Length: 109
Image (tube, rainbow, N blue to C red):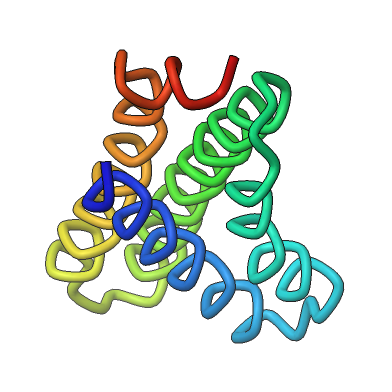
């Protein structure tokens, strides 16, 4: 269970770094504060954490599309950046999916 929580915290930190680079300080604060929902032992908090992870995954996918389009227009290589962001998107998706495990559902009735 600890691995699932740590994976989510890492995904939230990466998402916060992404928003920090875009100067979206409100979203940075939200991304940093989201893991605090683990402190509430309610089912709604676990569902909200999953929703946040899936939303962050969509955000990463949009970032990949925009980055690839921008780099193709400028004529710069884009494959390395797309692979890195794709790996981060998969990590974030995995963090959300692992929150649906039996052990976590038992701890969050």
